[in-house]
Image (cartoon, rainbow, N blue to C red):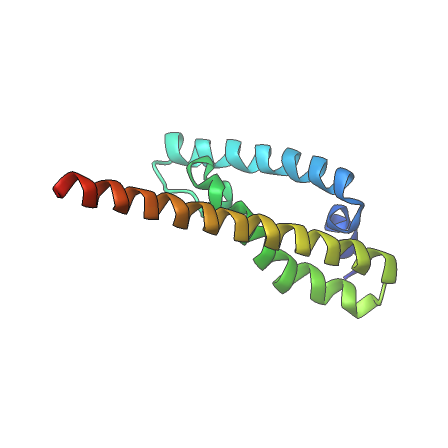
Length: 118
């Protein structure tokens, strides 16, 4: 478990460090997804699919909640848990903002369509 905790450690770092590592990992994942699509003719999983990058905040939340948080809670590492909680709050905010933006776009589209048909 310590090896896993070390491997996932970037998520417990302060936001600026965690964000930079996440960008590097995401870049690698997208490259893998591109190769899966072009060479193997497969549809990559959401986390590897650059065409689904809007789903990343939700996927990050799921990853934090199901993998990272339980792991670090086992060790009761208070500083890492504090940073992880902060990252979870930021990802939740990003996820909420994205949903609100989508809802607003949908409402605007609906209004235009209704006006068009009148």
